[in-house]
Length: 307
Image (cartoon, rainbow, N blue to C red):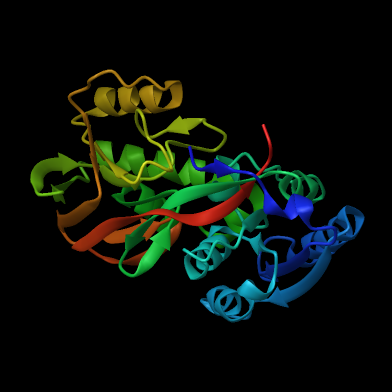
């Protein structure tokens, strides 16, 4: 299942590069807490602070291979920049919560408090996971169009600062209800390894992880992060009853056949929408459809707590 023994256990004083986003929620406070935790754990830690979008990837590419392990402290954007830059390198990456959603860290079961997360990860295991690629951007959790993209686009900064991940939940619910009540659907054409699927939809997701937010929301059945495929999930409610049933099922892991849900596994997809929509990946808005989505099997090495 892509889990291997942690090589850091044989390193007496692991050399750690901490790539921190000072603009993230409570950035300075969390950085100080992280440095204390590394000292207590006996790790030697250097800090590199990001200054702009894309800087975390630059730091990881230029300095990451000089360390035993690279940690990120920020949101999902920071974590995925580093994971993308170190793909195929074999360098272990530890994800510390410093942003709003922290979808990747939550999906990996990493404690949100950095003082607990750091020893858990340094004493943990390495999990090799697949990465998706869309519009030149690597993602770990999921990419999509429709409701999830509207949620990312419309959640205001003040709400994220005050409410954290609850802000995304509120905006996702709002986007879903608007799509159904106002008929905000779109036509989607998905080519999945040569098979063509055409439907009216409210949301289309290309999932690598099967669940998010501590398994509160599940995308579909048998979704694995290390199986070399992505799972296309198309949600097509025709009325409010359909929408409520979908919401109930994804929160209850009920994956029985449903006329409003379609699942398709694949290694290469092309998604086209009418009208043109903006794609998001792991909470980052990327660009317009159409787009190709592919998978890189076992490309990233991520630290996870031992079970």
